[in-house]
Image (tube, rainbow, N blue to C red; front, side):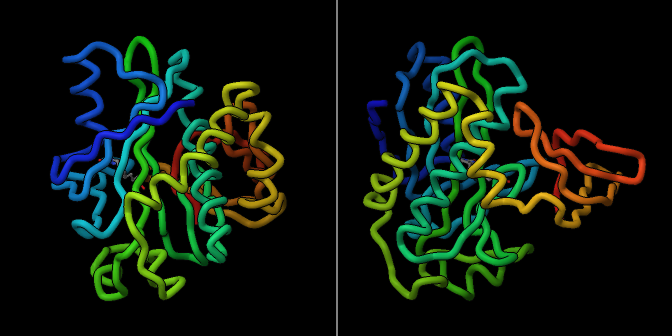
Length: 238
Ligand code: BTN
């Protein structure tokens, strides 16, 4: 994959800008990246806001050319989460991917991913990685959050952090393109598991409790409950 980055000082959302480029300029190339030093309306999953510190955190979207069957979207986000996790671990930060597509350090979120289909040709993978966010800034977010700075004590260059992600992204997206979630399952289950761990899944108003039974062919979570194995496509795990 050849990465080509366009940096913006300030925009609403890199996912939205990627879509606009897609609509105005035809199809972005595979590997095209829209990156922003500041997002004024960063979006998260389930209509939440994504808060990042202007100039200090990494916000970008990557275009991946692929068939756009709806069920392929979640596992591409999982491939991206494995890539971010590899980068963090290579810097000594003991992170772990969390289903469906976050990266956590302990119970604190360091990276969130929002992937969206663009018809007819691809998926926009939006990645927010907290790089130089301070403890005070993380504390102002309504959910437990952390950053590379908080975890390692070391400030980092944002553009270099983006570049350091290219190799793991290329590896995991390559695996995903060759074999879908089957090629991710072993690593994902090792790092986000173990199978058998107790889980509660909140999906809208519904709460389901059970134990992790594994992950299905598209990365869907399999929950062992007293009614048997249930398949969960979306939700929040605790
Ligand atoms: C989540 O955890 O809910 C997903 C957060 C995704 C945030 C990234 S930042 C870059 C891209 N642009 C957006 O507006 N959102 C994603």
